[in-house]
Each structure stands twice: as structure tokens, then as C-alpha cells.
Length: 281
Image (cartoon, rainbow, N blue to C red; front, side):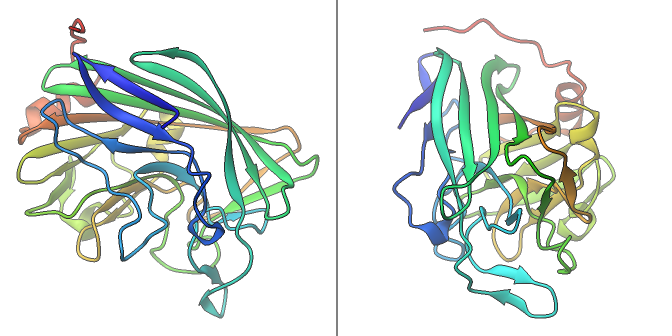
């Protein structure tokens, strides 16, 4: 563990650098475990079905031709192929470290160590009505000195596979319910550019929203039947190109709550109306 978040005397999240992971798992910093204030763990790491899923992380399967996501690489007209194309995201350092916040700098690299992207990530936590709120913002800056293509399987020809960017792997689910203001169920929610997305299981609720207009415009990536996971689709369906020195900014805000929340409570929080509470301990 390189950092943690503590609220009301409870460690609600831990950050690890992932440096020890083998290349095919896409080594990268990630948050795990993330917990409710009641102690329920709401992330999973290295599950058997997709061992490169790592709690809450940020990654892409195609960064200038390098796979920083992990697992097989989708190749147009060939499908998923096991390639020796895995890069890594290296933790560089921390700043502004507090009980409820830290800044993190990372370096996105190709397999030979070529610097592709410099990342500056801000991680913040606060107590709110119904639980606590996690906010993660990232700035990805092209460090190559040339144009850089960012993409994922959807942009490379795989329909419906828009994963890439923020991704939250959930633990095994009991009775999952996923919904937005416009619909409910995996088929209605996946691919929707909805203002918020709520995931409720037997004893907890997670509500996701973007921190700004660009982040809220990214469609949601959702899996319920195959495995439990929620993400935002960066570089889908089209690739993103960064000029030399150009930067891309995205942010995710998540309400982490014990129990089930009704739509009214979700709407109030997503609109920014969730009152911040004074931390205790």
C-alpha cells in the first residue's frame, strides 16, 4: 500500500502501485479494497475470470499500439489475440497526502520503458449524506513528442467492447440492480451517456457520475451477466488522438453507501446536493 483514505476513523480505500504484477496483467496503480463506512468491500482484484481487473483503475488497451489494460489484445479482423505488447503504468510519486486525499503522478510506458503518457491523478474523499464520496480526476499528457493514438477494442473493431478509461470491478454479486434515470438493466444502461448510473446489491449502493461535461459525455460500460463491472468508455467508439504535449482530462465521482438508496436520494447526490458532513476521528 502506498496511500490510503480515512474518514470517520475508517480506512475506506487503499492505493497500491501494482508494480509486482506480471506484464500480461497490465501492472498499474489502483484502489483496492474500497469499502463502505460499514466495512463492506465493494471492489475486487484479480478475479479468476479477468485477472487483469484491478479494483478501481484507469487504463486503455491501445496506447500508441501498447496494451496497458492487460489480457489479450483485440486485433481488427482477427479477434482477441495473445500478443507480446503489454506496457505498464508506473507509480512515480505522491503529493499533498492527507487522511482524505492525495495526488499521484504516474508514467504510462511501453514494454521497453518508452514514456508514452504522463499522468497526474487527484484522489479525494469526503463524508456525505448516506455514506461517503470518492472523486478521482486524471490528466493524461502525451509525453512522446509525436501524435499519440488512444483507443480500445470498440475503436479497433469489436462491437460493444467499449471498455477503457475508468473501470470499477465489483465483487461477486448477490442480487445486482443497475439503472440510470432513463432505464434499468444491463441492456438499457450499457452504452448510455446518462448523467448518473446506480449499482445496488443486497447491502450496498454505488452511484457513478462524471465530474465535468466531457466526462459525463462518455458512455457507460456495464457488465452484469458475465461479471460485475462498471466503467466509462474513453476512446469509444472512436479513438482519441493527442498532439505532442496535448492533455486529456477526465473525472469520476462515486457515492459509496451502505444499503439501498431510492432514486430521490441518488438524484440529489448526482446534482451536487449531497451535503458534506464533518469528519469524525
